[in-house]
Image (cartoon, rainbow, N blue to C red; front, side, top):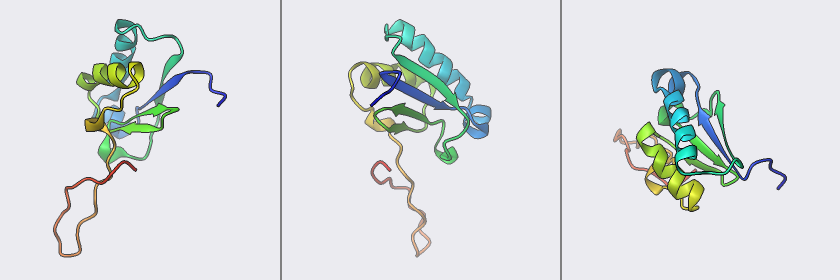
Length: 116
């Protein structure tokens, strides 16, 4: 791949993730953790308008891995940086998991399926 960065962290700052859920604070925390954990300049963060996953947000996508984290809060950022960006381990508890639609008998499914 011809990528200008080793890793790229995309942070949704759209109306719901940014406005309602304050994802700009998440971006600020990523920048703090990049310094605290001495990440190289080859790791870049970029705010993005919307990923279309609003009901799951705030959302963060890490490339080139293609990993989507959902429901991310500022308190989760140090773990994402340490585990994923430094050590290459996915933070399973924050992985995007598509919610199942309501079952035909009316039961609302709250279970998760695997990563989309």
